[in-house]
Length: 230
Image (cartoon, rainbow, N blue to C red):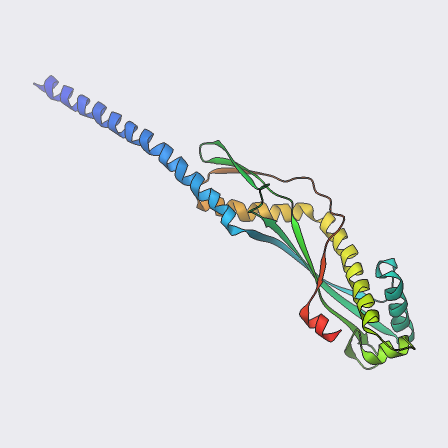
C-alpha cells in the first residue's frame, strides 16, 4: 500500500514538474518579445540630450579666431578702453534616436547591442559683455558709445552683423576644440543614461557601439537676449 502511495506522489511530482517546465517554455518567448518591444520604445525619446558644457571665457587679448573686424574692434576696446570681455557660450550634446543609424539588435536572451548615430551639437552664445574696470560695471559688447568711437563713419547694420559673425566664428572654433576633446565623456554619459532606461525595460545585458567621430564644423546660434542687445 505504501508503495502505491509513493508511486502516486512521484507521478504527481513528475507531472507537476513537467507542467511547470512547459509553462516556462511557453512564457519565455512572450517575455522576450515584450522586452524587445519595450526597448524599441527608446526611439520615441527622439532627441536625447546627454551632456552640456557651459563656458565663460575672460578675453583680455585677441587672436585670429575673431577674424579681421573682430580683432580690430576688440584690440581697440581691450587696449584703449582698458576693458576685459566676458564671453559665455553653451554646447548641448544630443543623439537623435529616431535616426535610421540608431540600431537595436538582439544578441541573446535579454541581451542587446545598440549602435548609436553620430552625436549632434548645438552651440549657443549666451552672453557677451565688457567689464569696465574703472567703473566696476558690465557693459553691452555693442555699446553705441564704444562703436561710434571705433567706427568714425558711424555704425551700420552691416557692421553689427560682421561683429556678430566674428563672435560666432570665435565660438565655433572654441566649441570644436572642446567637442573633439571630450567625446569619451559624452559617450559615457549616453551609455549610463540608456543603460538605466534599458534595465527598466527588463534588459539584462546591453552593449553600445559608437562611431569614431571628428567634427570640423558646427552651427552657432545667438541667444535672444544677446541678439536684442546687439
